[in-house]
Image (cartoon, rainbow, N blue to C red):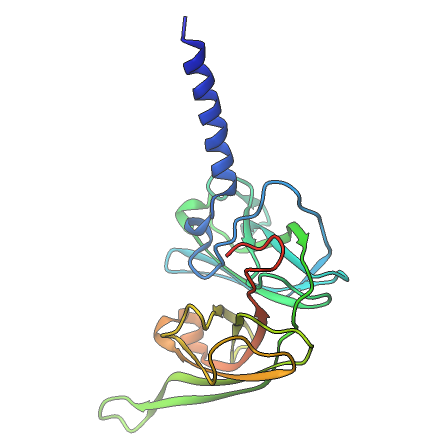
Length: 273
């Protein structure tokens, strides 16, 4: 007969392993652009969300899904989406043996009637067929303390053109972005972050990326260092290189760049760094 103490330890370790799997980040399934914000296994609510500019495609062995998720509630919310891959006939495909995968929105907290983007890159070898579309729903949400509402009041982008060798034709290689962010409420924004949304000339949203000036110091610059004071403003600048963008956007070229802003405040209730 097995030692009952050993059996008990194995059971406890097994449950701990399951809990770790449930709460572990799924970066290997949703790609490097999604926030590393695992969804809690308990204490979540539901909420009403609508989606805009959802775009799916397959490229470089990945199934890409990008879009915007609108918070229709009257509360500040942190939320996660449930993404289901569909084939051309609309049949559900499993992802890593499961019917869906959880994707967090970019913002740590979204104000009432606000929005945030999401971006997932799922390896095709984790999907049980050939994806052609997706289905989206809310996986879970939790109410957050109110915070500052940051607004990108000025967005300007300059195309960078270079001559292609001896050819006289100039080629668009990058964009230089300059963003003015205002903080109109009487609340300090401790760690302002930007969501950069890239739309192609085909009208599709192709790319979403978060810039955290406190972390991404080599990628984004700002006119001042530190929090944005209440009723203050800040100017940010960053470059967008076509070399790291999806092939479809390299072909279509950028039509416009939209920017959403949020405050990543580790001191906010229930928020993890």
